[in-house]
Image (cartoon, rainbow, N blue to C red; front, side):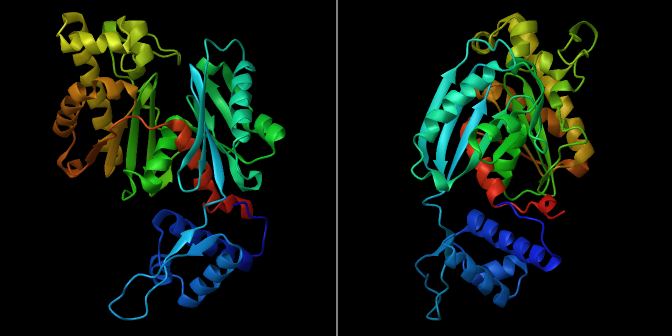
Length: 387
């Protein structure tokens, strides 16, 4: 929800309302008494907020639950029946879009495959094609709350620009501006790894964590850090770029597209494995399962480098959780991840040994995560709007 510039009292009122809304969204059905306990607001304040939201048809009351013969609390839920979001996964080889309602039901999914982007405007043709088709499927256009993007590249989510994505041929590309001009809807952009961190921290595997790190091994390597439930972007929106950790030396220090040498992504990614190791991911998977010497040499080198890089980050930042995902791990994680976990625990100090290591069963559908980004912003408290 966007909030205009308001007085201090109105600002506090809106912040409290957003706190309540977000709790109902993430933990509903939830009773008024539990809202008061979790927010620290008085019962009267909760009553005022709930009554206002009920009158605006934003939330609904559900069937009361038994409470030992006493008056039964009435659980509250978000009225999400006529609220929708579009999510777009913008990848190097395809554009995937999903239309979802705010109950996380998928209404329509469309994928357009891309042979090769020819110039910086070429990706927009595919994006427009996917969005236009999804718009035709929205049951109630007034209920569409925005379009979210998961992007393989460096993203300034505040400015709405793609800082750098060589595969998309974008350099400081004003994506939000172009889309808002065409569609007149709120547009939200995020790097794919950062988006995964947001979604998993909201109501996923990291929901109970205050400090976490996410590592996505895919076409490239993405990573993200969450500190006190807040995503750490860094001064230039490039914080947590594990792919450019200097992991390889001597003859293995291959030149990277970033302009440096020895980066982890030069071997520990799908693109790097092909470019510098000579294997597609499918070929590599078959080769290591038959113990082919050349493949096993790369496997051992990559596994040790990943473990060392992540162990150093755990020692520096002391996260509660680390999470692995990505197609690289989907394919060979059953062989590599147990070794990485053991090496990490051997390398980190005793003070960090309680770190929890989580592996997603498979890489999430990022167009659905991008739709979740719209929902996250809708229930967020945008403090910057007050100033």
